[in-house]
Length: 339
Image (tube, rainbow, N blue to C red):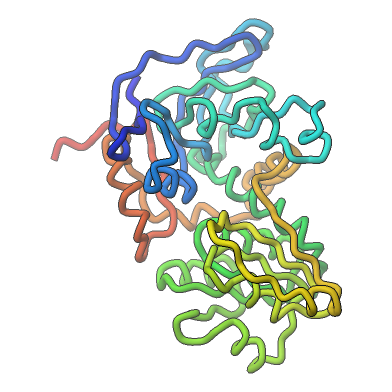
């Protein structure tokens, strides 16, 4: 099969053996896989190893099953939860399956930047035949957002700030809308992604190069019930805490490399909560699939481009400076153009 593998210089297309399902596994023919920011940063920062196949936001069709798996799954259209979990260890019991030692597809085991991928049968979620199968790739980022909004403890009628409008921030806007949040302020720099924020349902969209989140909050007399920090900007956490109302929650979603200063006095005196959110659990993933199947989450409108496998290394590189790009899907079964 063809796959995009990590190399010392980035990524490249290579020929690899077709995966063979182990017991309790299936092989999925990958229809579409999202190019996640974490994939882009891992390649850019050299956090991969030679020959590894990334790609964890995907859906496809089951083409082979291993021992112990119902053969009726063959031919089934599925979304695939990349996060494993034994269900018994301390991390799993605390709702953090991504911290379990069980490998995660596209992260610690081969992923879906490939024509075929093996995955545990317990992690596939069947989807209806009338759902365009590329939309199954949207379940993973939406699940990330649903988990973050769950931690934010928002209620219908609340106001919330989404700081950073990359794909996860944009999915967070969708998740806040699903939770009934009335006013959603989105803050970011990319013009294309700010436009997408409005499309996803943000009531206010601000360019942080022109106005700070504090200035906007003061001008609008806003204090937020929750801030979802999805930007990894150096000053984002103190800025977020500065616009929270009493008892508000700041959810750190971005994988920020720096150590921000946290103003402790207002954290205590205002009863704020600062909590980290990484990945999701199985119920979050199934909820995301349900929102996609029922049409409640229009995340397919975020897709800027769909590329074939040979074009995927270049797409990963272009997403380092996205400009107008929002989300790119790779379509491993697509025949490359000869033009």
